[in-house]
Image 1 (cartoon, rainbow, N blue to C red):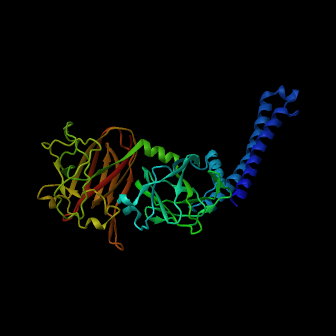
Image 2 (cartoon, rainbow, N blue to C red; image 1 turned 30 degrees about the horizontal axis):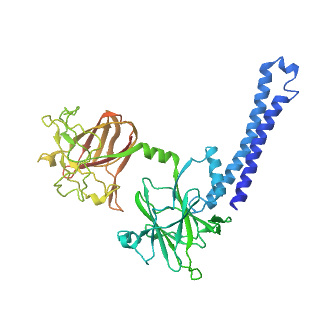
Image 3 (cartoon, rainbow, N blue to C red; image 1 turned 135 degrees about the vertical axis):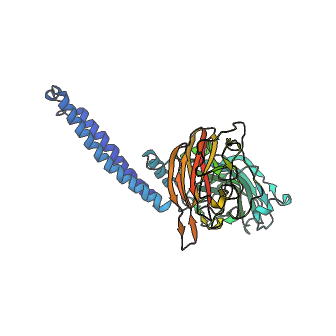
Length: 460
C-alpha cells in the first residue's frame, strides 16, 4: 500500500515535470512565437512567452500539489506516529524535503560489534543486572563479514535463552528509532527495561550471513529513549529444534530533525532565576541603574524552595553567565524572602521552578507596597531566544534593557483550580554583553512578592 501511494505521487510528479518541459519546448520552437513579425516587436514577444510559461507553471503546480497530497497521505497513514517505515515512506519523506514541505532528517546508526554483551541467565531487571559483571560477557563475533553496511555478526549459543545488550549514549532524544535485525525468527526488544510494543515486520528480502539465507526483520517506534545512557536488550528465546549456534546481527537507526539537531549542537540553554542576589528599592527612591562591581562574578541560583513562606538557609550557584552585582553602599538593597499569600505549590506553571519568591528586605516591608527589583547579567555570546515566566502580587511591570515588555500585569487566580496563574513572555531584548532587568511590583498591604524565571538559548 505504501508503494502504491508513492507511485501515485510519482505519476503526478512526472506530470509536473513533463508540463514544464513541454511548455518550455513550445516557447523555444513555436513558429508563431518566434515568427519574423513578432521578432520585430520584442516586448510583445516577451509578454507572450512569459504568459505561456506562467500558464505552464500553473499546470505543473497543480500536478505537484496532487503529488504532495499523496505523499502526505502515505506518511500520515503509515509513518507519522505509527511506528512504521519502509523504503517507500523514506522516498516520500525525502521528496517532501526536496519540495520544502517537510524538514530534512539526519540519521545516527549503531551496529552490533564486539563491545556488545551477552547473558545466558534469566533476568528481569536488565538495568540492575548490568551492575553485576559476572552475568555479562562480551559477545563472540562469528566472522569478518559485515551486513547492514557495518553490523558485525554475533554467534548465538543454541539450546538456551540468550540476552544481548548494548548501552546507547544520546545527547538529544531522537524522533524515531528503527531497529533492523537478521535472525531466523522475531525476537523481543527492550529499551530501558520497557518492552517495545508491536510486532517486527518480516521483510521480503533475505540476508546472506556466511552463506546462510537468513530472515530480516525491522521495527520502528517512538522511543522511550532519554538523554544520557540507555540500555537496549534483545531477548532471543531458545529454539528447541536447534542445538547448534546461530547467527545474529542488528542495526539501530536514530532519526533526528536536522535543524533541531544542528541547533542543539551549536547552542546551550541557560537559566536566570529570582533569588537572594537580586537587588530591591522602595517606591520614591531613585531607580536608575545601580553602581556595579565588575570584578564580582556570581552565577544564577539554582536552589529550589518548596514553600515561599519557608526560610531559605543556603544558596547553590552554577557558573553560567557573569552577573554584575550592585554595590551594597548604594540605595539598592539585597532582597529577602517574599510574603506571598499562597504557597509555591499553588503557582501554576512554577510549582517546580528553582526561582525564589523575593521582596524588599527591611523589617517594615509590610508597609512597603511598591518595590523595584534589579538584576544585571553578562551574556558572553549571541542569543537565539529567551522565554520567561513570572508571578507578582499584585501587579508587575518589567523593563529589559530600558524597554518596557510587561505593563502593569495584574495577578490572575483560577478559583476553580485554586491556582495562581504564571504569566509567560517571549523576550527579544537581550543582547551580548551586559543586560539589565528592572521590575516594578505593586504589592498588597499585607501579602506581596515577586518570582521570576527565564530560560534563554545562546550560541556555544
